[in-house]
Length: 266
Image 1 (spheres, one colour):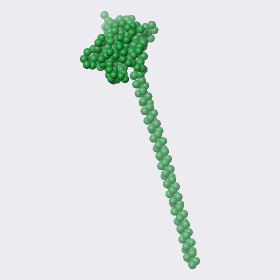
Image 2: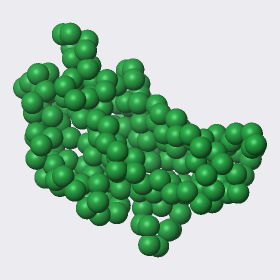
Image 3: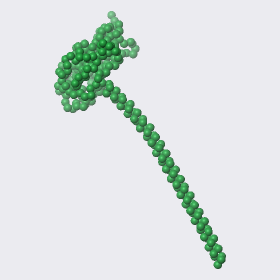
Image 4: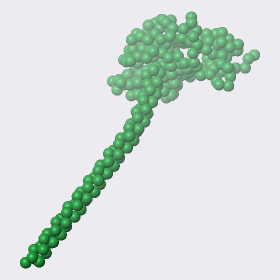
């Protein structure tokens, strides 16, 4: 009887020890599981943090790119306005100078006319008759751009030069009704795109030279100390047959260049 009690007690001790070992294994397993979960969580946080850092860099690069594009477009379409550029050759000293005020003669390589936020169609007859003598520099009116500037030969030789107005961009075919009047020393020439149906010049105009140029004209025998006065006026001609509702919202960007040409002296 005593032997049975002893065996039973020993068995209970072994079971208790086994239970403790099992609990220890479970505890260790739980601890290992918790550590694995903690490591996975830490790795996930680390990966998320790394992803956010990379995303931040990408967004910064994209933002910088968009800012560059914005200012490039702003320069091209907003602050660019109608510009006049003195295009002199880099391999010779130019004789031409350009300025917008005949009294101050502040010479520049690029001149810019003030832009209009909005321009609707008008009749060219509404533009003042004295527009060429109205003012120096920018003197825009209601729904038209007007700009006056001067070219002077400061060299000792007689030269030729070319003046050209480039068509940089057209949106919604607004060029179909655009008018560009160029006064050279009081002589007026109005340019317009040829009639879309007849291909003939519009009334009282000369047709645009081609799809890229309003005109290209050579000014010959420009003597030393001579001064030429230019006035450029731009508007949308409401009496043009091609001035229709489809042009609403259209835009057109142009710029003018003055290119010097030396000639052999007698």
